[in-house]
Image 1 (cartoon, one colour):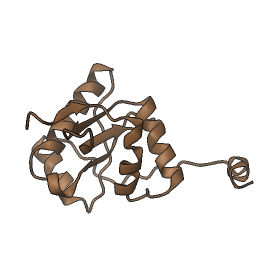
Image 2 (cartoon, one colour):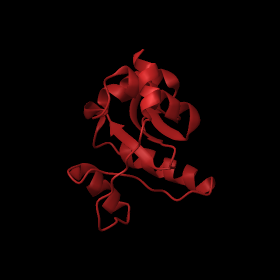
Image 3 (cartoon, helix red, strand yellow):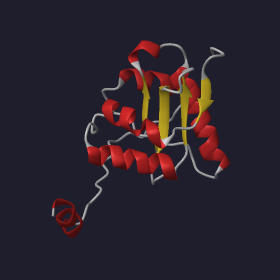
Image 4 (tube, helix red, strand yellow):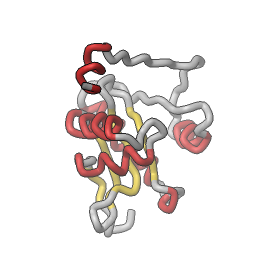
Length: 141
């Protein structure tokens, strides 16, 4: 790895960038959700010499590796593999399995995970996270 880069964990100040690059992001609610994940659960990222993330992955409340991403101009340099391996080791050290979700259409990530001998479940996975109506009513009022 380039000596000007640092392998570390995400900081709450990175939540805006993560939200912009997330398919469900780009709004204040998703940015707050990602900030909460960063504060509460393990994450790994590669930072440039200005402290900006180039590649990252974080975990959610289910100890699932999610939102792995590498900025387009930094792809094909091994950062995704480094981040995924480091985060998997961190999860294992805490007694959790390394598990994640990948869209069927995300061929680059699937190719990377297959090269790392990841095991894929032979089915689709759907997670429904319910936000009670009374919570939404408080947010709107």
